[in-house]
Image (cartoon, rainbow, N blue to C red; front, top):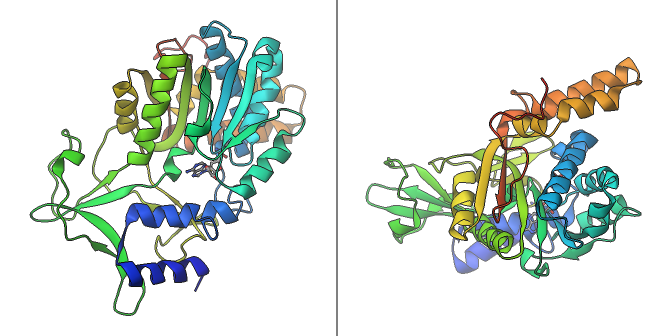
Length: 365
Ligand code: SAH
């Protein structure tokens, strides 16, 4: 049995079952035995591969987006370039390399990384050596006020959620407790959940239906929206999830590129929940911000010039290298791959940002 599992069982024995949100927070962020705290999960040798690790083109195109946003902001000579959960730092490194074409942006951008994992902070420092002198923050709230361009790729899916389960007479909190043999198991809280916590447009729920409440992500998005309105700038969220708030259990665990049981190896496998883009959009609009999208990742990258960039990158290269670039384009933008599963949404204080027009003139297919 792993150490975190032993500790969670002891906690439940002493104080009773815990909400899914608390379980998820312990699994991912526990300072001693949490998943992100103790390991480097990203890459072929890890548990999952993210878009920046597929190809440099991903970070470069996000760089193109940031330069356009900076220009739309009136090219201020100081802007916070913030990334939430930067992983290996690859996206930021590719973005900054692309930004060399716009020295005014490169000079204005001060890099802030919001990252809780010491392991990944060290990795980010190594990746960004010679490219930037980032300032690390434990929490978004610690980033100083000011105009900001904020990037979050596969960040919101790692934030803790609560799960509410419909029973015959009410909604109840899903809890993690112990079964008769002392193993972790799901159960339900005795108290009834106030229905006001659920969105009004939610479809009629049958007994057993699950609704996921993502307050951590919504609070963060409200703060980001407020910042965009007050100081200017924009926020780019890229993640997998759904575009309308609905019912369904999306909590999942992944280890070594395969699905795993959520309760079996806490802290050893990744745990995520789909992002509810509609809920994030409501939070941003509630703060007075403007929301663009969500659009499919494939659509967004092509509008920013993915195909042109792939062509330029492949020019003069060997057939094998060109095939690899083509495969990366397919992986990032293909309909059966990340292209439709992942969505992109921007939040601004009202400036216009590229990549969200229905008929983009930038793309030549
Ligand atoms: N954006 C990267 C990594 C995605 S994995 C990429 O695309 O490759 C999620 C990242 O978010 C990791 O860096 C993880 O350590 C970080 N993270 C997870 N929860 C966090 C939290 N609550 N606060 C700050 N960082 C967090």
